[in-house]
Amino acid sequence: MGKVIEFPTPNYFGDCPKCGRTDGYLNISRDHWFFCDRHMTKWWGGSNWFDEWKYETEDIWFENFKKLLQYQEVEPWFRLTVMEIHNSGSEQVVLFPPGKDKSRSGE
Image (tube, rainbow, N blue to C red):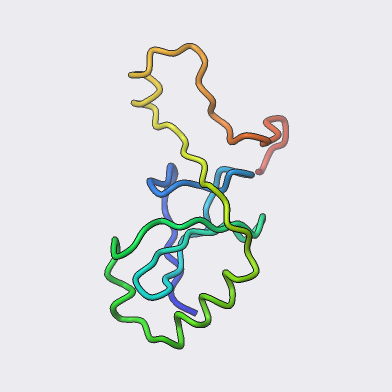
């Protein structure tokens, strides 16, 4: 399997709609797929944004494909940065992904 690249929050390419996190991304050829292992979700982040795919082999892409084949494709959740919240002028800003239980800690 290729190297999993982890991103600090918020992720420009979106996060899992169930927990608001990502476990990084894997390449399949020049396509970048972000994923959440906990919820077995994946979402497409685009093509050719990062150079790592150029140094990976078809064997690595096939291993990545096999892993992600088990995951459900979803629409990513995009959180707002502090500056976006400040600039929105809205008093009602969603800070948690839909369906996230805000009372549970550690998630």
